[in-house]
Length: 335
Image (cartoon, rainbow, N blue to C red; front, top):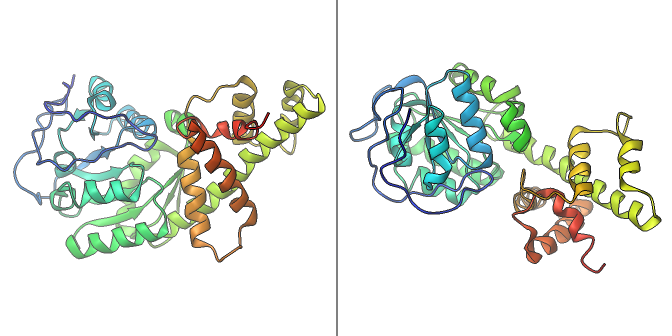
């Protein structure tokens, strides 16, 4: 059973992890897979089967648990002991720094909230230098197309021997815990056999879309569709309330019919119950909407533009860390 890390930095785990380590690499905690890596980077070939997960918030922790359940040796890192300690007890090796986690892995996964955090951890925290020769870096958080391209180019310049895969995921807490994520992968064909077993453990399906960057494009389109569905559910419930229609009856009328969709149904029931516990926080959903708007031509996405303004007001009122189903609350500001 793995021990907790020798050194931890305080903080709170976020939806896509919140790691940001500017310290020097320290020793990894020893777990069932043996002692942690040591020595200066870049390292040698490393353990081809070992997977490192950097960022163990809601999504990263669930993904790491599925890697462990599939029997893949897994190292985890996050800036908080609270985020990694349960994974250590589940059998993961807990590293004291992001660089230590990456050094011995054939596949390194980043599940971090923003491009700035990814850059700070990978290029400011020693990860790029520590990556094993021939390793694959799978960037799985949603950080947008521009940042993905910049990060990929920077890695190619610094470490041409490392393969970069852009692989954001579609799905929130429930699918992540069940290993039912949709993985929108893009990158060099040589990365497929390295990343494939881990992707199979974490997702119900992996779609390979071509060169790196195509995954991020697809993710923004998928999340635009999802966001419009969720706002539609919120407004349909609000209309039902205004008309005196029971919310449960609205759910019953839609369920199982041609208008039913799993994400819409799940969020409808959360709104109906007033359950805004975070599965996919509203602030991260807004981030993805704004990334999409920023890449489109001016006024090309009027519905998303209106949705962004609506959700931004809800975030400003303190609902950002609640689930995206808190979109319902934005409709009740003047109620």
